[in-house]
Amino acid sequence: MLVLGGLLALVDGYAAFIGTASFLGSTPTPQDALRASATCLTGLLALAAMAVLALLHGSRWGLVLLALPAAVLLAFGGGLPGVHVVNAPPGGPGLDALKGEGTGLNWTVTVLALAGVGATLLVRRRRRTRDRPPGGRR
Image (cartoon, rainbow, N blue to C red; front, side):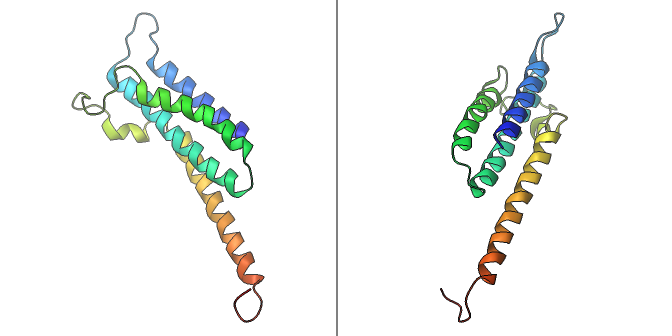
């Protein structure tokens, strides 16, 4: 989980950087910054779902190490220059940025990690009810 979480944070950070960098004199618009911000913030959701899955499978120290990429994504996602959702120009991406081109990987990882959490909890529940002695209580 640690390696996958670190790679996801690296890809998201790179996408946010490229989306807001000035190349050949071009200036990024507030919409570009908002899209990059949405990429980083949806990456945080994916990292949180991965952390819950890792916690259910017994990982403790790996979760502490996932906090660093999560903090970087939070810093990029919440503090990109020119990103103010309240003051965004009308007709901009707004909340539609959460389903933009850079967020597809994050939503996929979030859904897969949450499916893993659900499957883990279901297996544990079935194991508990199967191992219960006749009479109901242990």
